Structures are given as C-alpha cells and as structure tokens.
Image (spheres, rainbow, N blue to C red):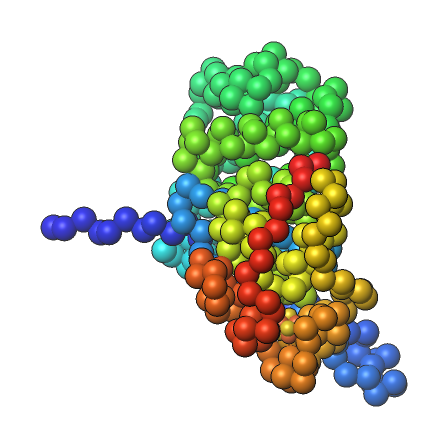
Length: 348
Ligand code: SF4
C-alpha cells in the first residue's frame, strides 16, 4: 500500500476569528436600551507554518497576537474558522494525548507560569508523568537532568525552587518543561520581553539552537521587531485583529509595504542618522469593540482615500514584492510609491 504523503505544514489557521462578549449584564442593558458589545480580538486570520520554521506575529498591544497564540494551542476555541495541526483539525488533535503532547506553550512571565512551591525537577517532570512518557523514577530523573543540561543549566538545579533562579534561568526552566513532552511545535508568547537585552539574546540563541537540534516549529509572538528579526523565517504584522502584511523576515525588514508596517519600522530610532524618509502616523489604535469601517487603519493612514473608508482590503500578493502578501488598496493601486528599501533595524 502506498504511504500517505507527509504533511509539510505543521500549523494552519483558516479564517480564524475570536470574539469576546463584553456586554454589560442583561438587566443593565434592558434598562439602558444598550445592545450587546463584542470585542473582535481576532477577525479572520489565515496563515500556515511549514515544519521546522518560525512564523512570528508582531503588532502593538491589543492587536490580537496573543489571542492567536491561545487559539492555536486550544486555550480558546475559535468563534469562526478552523485551526489545523499537522493536517488534522486542532480539536481532534487536542483530544488525542499523543498529538496534544506535540504542542507546548512558553509564556512571557516564567515566574508566574512555574509553581513556586514545587522543586524544579518536579515542574519539569510533570508533563513526562502526565503523558505517561516514562514511569520509572530513575528514568524520569535522568530525563530531567538531560533537559536541564540541554537548556544550559545543571542537573543539580533540579533540587532548587524557582525563586532561587534569575529571570533568564527561570525562562530556561520553562523551556525545559515545555520540551519534556517531546513536542515538535512550540508557541512562544513574548518569551523574552521580561528579560534584559543581553539575557534576551542568550535565550533567543538557545531557542534557535534547540530548533536546529530538534527540528522544532515555532509560532513566535512579540512586539519587539529586533527580536522578531533575529528568530523568524516569516513575519506576520497584525493590526486590530487582522493580518495586514505577511512576508519573509528579510523582505519585511528591507522592503516593508503596508503603511502600518512602515510606521512600526519608523518607530525604531534612526541610530545611523541616515535621514531616511518616514511616513508620519499619528493617533491611537482604535477600539476592537467598534473597529473603523473599510480598512481598519484608515483613520491613521497618510495614504487613506474614500475607497479605504468603505472597502476592507484583502491580503493579496503585493505588486513589486511577490513574496509579500499585503492588505492595502494603495499598494494594489500602485500609489504607495512601490517597494522602498529600508535600512536594517537596529538590534536592541
Ligand atoms: Fe492606508 Fe488605505 Fe492601505 Fe488601509 S487600505 S493601509 S487606509 S492606503
């Protein structure tokens, strides 16, 4: 019998949306005549992550990137759309422990996600026991020691409690725990944003080394463009619950196309004083409870016109940069000035 073809996509989201009901209690609404209020945290996001690669999602706080992270590991169910894990619907995969152990999440604050009353060895051993991967105590101890070594700690550190470690070391412990169920897909939600820049670089290097050694696939969530540039194969820029641009990392950083992506790049200091031309973008991110009509970026966009106010742009291949997908009428109409090279983003 011919073998089933290998699925080369680890994770795919198809028009995924997640709304939260933020209405006031029914009685208050009845008295005031107010309707239901829905917060559209994620509103129609589609992407695919090939195995062994990293897709990063960037955007300002409240753009929906962390909600996407929770949707793809099943912590939230989608209001609309579908998440596929290695070719199977996520719901089905989550119900199967042999599939569930393949996906793990690393959170921003390692101290909050590590039980302060447990010794590190028990924290790391918990998924091994929960998934029944090993049963003999000696085997579990040996595996925990191996994992601690793999993340740059000593097997003796297993005796200690989380508070005895620095922030960077605690994040190493979180990574060891995430790896203990032998996952091949990791969702990393701002894993280094609570750390100093030098420690941040060490953790990112560790994550990249582990990806090479173990063939891991990452969905990486960050607001920090320098971090994203360091770890990503592809980058998706989110604005008000939608993807506005998706491109290979280098392409995105050298030739950003969407006015919002350009604005994010422009927010980075011009340390080399190249005097590059910037697109001014003012204003605040609008509320996802009542997003603007048409293109949600139009109230802040210097290129907005009447079409932008009325018609929502789809994510399509960008003129001039065929590896980029962008949701912008100005790019589609060729009135954005075309691809313009931008100098490197300063690390920091
Ligand atoms: Fe600006 Fe219009 Fe493009 Fe939206 S669609 S980013 S408003 S030019």
